[in-house]
Length: 106
Image 1: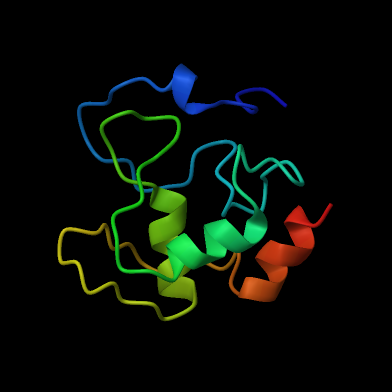
Image 2: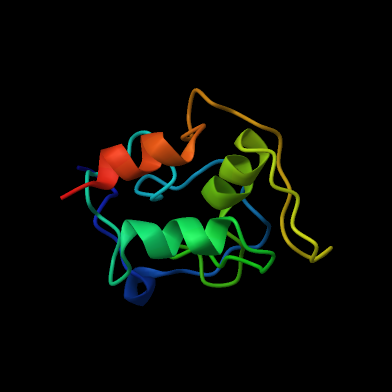
């Protein structure tokens, strides 16, 4: 569990945008089961399938790389041109809604 169980209170600024998921990113296959902060799995999915910018919970001034990769995995292209876009990677990040929901089910 090294580097996991972080919250936005633990967030540190970075000099540049990261391109791989954080150690406990909800969208990463390595995420602790059910570790979603104060949001439900359905709320995370709703945000990921939306068009807005998703802030990283561990890096205070960057976007969530895991969410950007998840969006690519499920072919979601946000309308907001400022939203982070990264290449698909189904090895490190969930590739389907059902995988995410099953992993984080209570």
